Length: 470
Image (cartoon, rainbow, N blue to C red; front, side):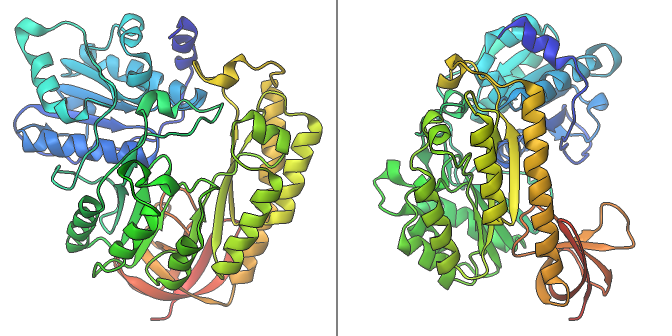
């Protein structure tokens, strides 16, 4: 890791962290989770192991003896946030009760000993293959005679199972279940295989056992996550492993929605679409990052398929799953993206009318193929293209929202609104947790986890407003 990354990190980041619930007594842990839902599951697993081993959690890191930051190292902005969070919490070693500061997760795996050299605030660096040892690592770093900087690092083989304790963060009626770890793809822009290794899938029996336990705890919505969900089970010798898994999961009583994330736009079989269309519990929601639509860009990105194949697939999904919500993601500013290539992408987004579109800037990532590509795009050009694409999508989303006014939707209640306690907040089947909009309810009574009928009375771009009618 170069010193430029540390300088980058000294900018003020946009934080989104999750901390543990306060408990009393014993050695206290302050835990900060950064990054994606896959990171969140890793944090939940580490928290469960720590509590099982006698550690206690505090919601205030200033009161913690050990502070653990589960970092993200995916793109430039994520690195910036992680570095800033380490620097911020490093001050607690002088101003608070912190004796040990640990960086875990993707940034730790990626930069390893370099983090310790450039960030003397840190005591330990824990890679993605060492989460199962987190309690022993904390004890080692707390031992008076062992207080020196250390790295715990191995190839990332770690994959939790149904027997590992978890302390879930966030909504009690909605849970993420990681079904695989790592990725076998070779996308030119992506560093995930460097941080997470090759794909390793959990056994179907393990996933089903965890899902059944979650249902018993009152979970109504299960989101299946991995780096490459469409490829689930290939490493286990399964053919159409995701289809087999979904057919088992829909048999679990109590679960209302099962929502797979991150489907790569290949290997989408008719059997998989039949499961989506035919099983009530499978959310009619496709999350499929397409990254670009221009053939030359797709080839440069090392993505399989071309525009014609993508268009056929999108049409096929919409035909086979009536009413499906389609979420995708695109990258702007990939090396060599001409104005003509971007215009083709913008026009396609306008034409395709996806329900949700995320847009990311291309980011140079060490040891990825794209870092050596020439014809780099300036940041201000990327900003312009991203804003233009988001403006197109905002108009589409607003129109789609208006189409729902007057309809009645099944809504899963998340609880009081984060904006005001005077409103309830929830999501219909086409709104995924944490990343999509919400349904605000200004009339009716319900509790978190309830599934209610809501008549939509208003649409505001990505959000809806309605009243409970049953």
